[in-house]
Length: 144
Image (cartoon, rainbow, N blue to C red; front, side, top):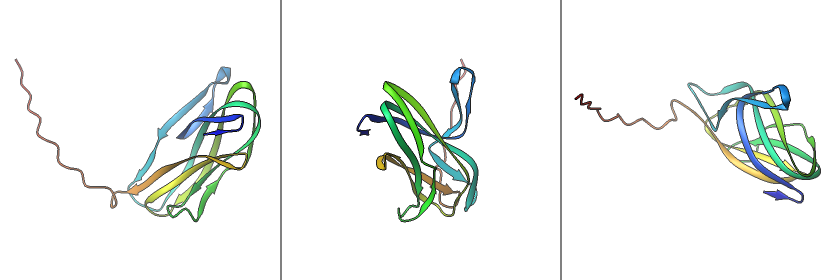
């Protein structure tokens, strides 16, 4: 989504992010859904990484909404980003001790300058809500 002089290129969810030498970022445990043995689950730590392209000063924020979109599960502190014309930057929002009380499709929203740039589903499920696995077909192996 383009927001005036700002474009969100991608968003990733991961367990942790480290800043390495040379201002490189290392992402650990990239995920798109949360599957656990039992709910509710409290995630000790996770991060949302947004990669932006554009120019100017902007304020960004990440929110996670409940499946019915009426309750805010967690929100990041608003973050100022500054881009030189044609520049890019990564913004990392860390979340600590976030509780997902029930299975469902939660919604991850990224905002810039108080406008919604992106929204995508985050499916949270436990073993009682997973679809049963179909048995695999037997594998026959021929050795010549």
